[in-house]
Length: 129
Image 1 (cartoon, helix red, strand yellow):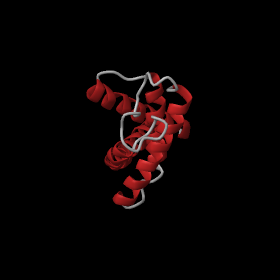
Image 2 (cartoon, one colour):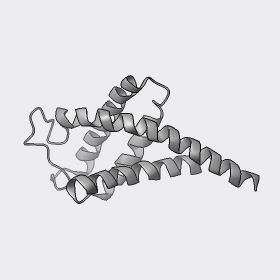
Image 3 (cartoon, helix red, strand yellow):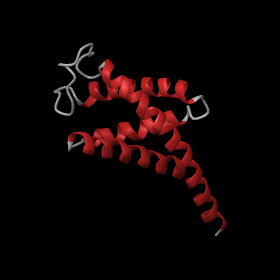
């Protein structure tokens, strides 16, 4: 059951990230599904921290995953391009978005707790059958 739970949480995070990109930019990339799912699972590990501390840690997680993802799949800047943003690092990350990620991480922590509880209840019901 642990693998199924983590897969469901990964799917929620990946879908959420892609959904936000579709709303913001009108397009996304499959790598953002993977990055979003990974970020959601990692941020979920912070769920017991106070919200402000978790949001800061989550911003760091998202920024690190974004940098690694960018270095692996965004070398030609076709997926995103922060080169014109002040303080950017290699055009892959920038401080302004890291601040935005703190807000997103705080929301993700709350969503993770709720999703985890719902999944636990659903899997418990299925296990009884």
